[in-house]
Amino acid sequence: MTLRSIALALVPLFLSLNVLAGDAEDIQQLLKSKQLPQALDRADKALAKSPKEPSIRFLRGIILTEMGRTDEGIKAFTQLSADNPQLPEPYNNLAVLYAQQNQLDKARAALLMAIHTNPAYATAHENLGDLYARLASQAYDKALQLEGANPAVQTKLKMVGSLFGNPIAPNKASTVKVATVTPTTKPANVALVTPTSKTLATPSPAPTKPTATPAPVIKATPAPTPAPKLEAHDTDKQQVAAAVESWAQAWSKQNVNGYLAAYGSDFKTPGGQKFSTWGAERHNRISSPKSIEVKISDLKIEINADNTAKARFRQSYKASHLSSTTGKTLILAKSGGRWLIREERTGS
Image (cartoon, rainbow, N blue to C red; front, side):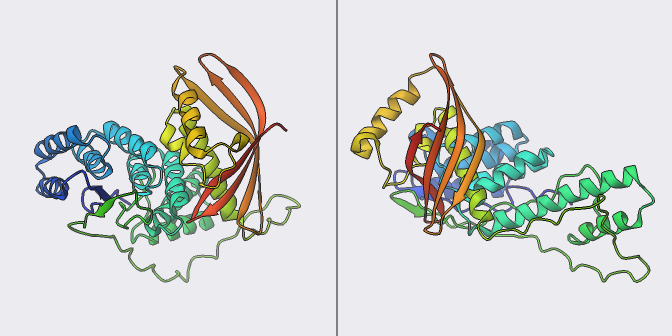
């Protein structure tokens, strides 16, 4: 299983009106012809005029990756995600780079954020499946090291490898597809850039089950307890947990735009303030300290039938001038596939 080059299928992003579409088209052509230094120079010049333009920043991340500057590419996509948390593509391509470095836990977290941002994002779901297959292969490979004569484990490892038409070798990054789906959430005043190409790998058909191989036997511990039945709202709980974690991370990074994007338009502000007034106050409080660290623990989530959720947790807050730990409750509502904060309460 080999990692697909990130530049083989450019992701369509939305281009702000203050940047000419010709800039992105020229950069894509330079990328396609492997003129990477020229493409990077063109991207830097475009960003000098419009530093926050997401499409050009995205293409610049691809250029850095193609030039072998992977750490800089990760940094570029991380900053792009922080400034544009509504776009799933940067999260997906972060997962590509993390998987390339065999940092599979980080790749999984990035893909879960992409799916949280857009639950209908098929590419991220497929990539997550590929990633879980790779994690499964690692677990089976470890089991073979401990019990090499176990034919059931050997069969399972071959079955995972057959999903991709070849056996899985240990310590190789999994196949992860780059994003090729247009985002469903558009920033204001944007126009679509059409990609120059779209390529997806198609897994080879799985071979028929060998007749000579004994059926896999699942080992159990003595007196096993029945596996819990998955509830219909387990996916919602995962998405709410990801939303709360994203909110805390944006706060820690002092990314005010990402922090405020976690709140819905119907958020109940303290004292009934206008959201704009409350947002300005939060901007000052978040941006003023030299550093902020927000950690959450003991997270408990309840999903309600009216598409709302209650998230209760312990919040540890550290800043250059203050440190505190308190209980907090967030009431979130599902809107457009995203879980947004509707109400915030402090205390147990």
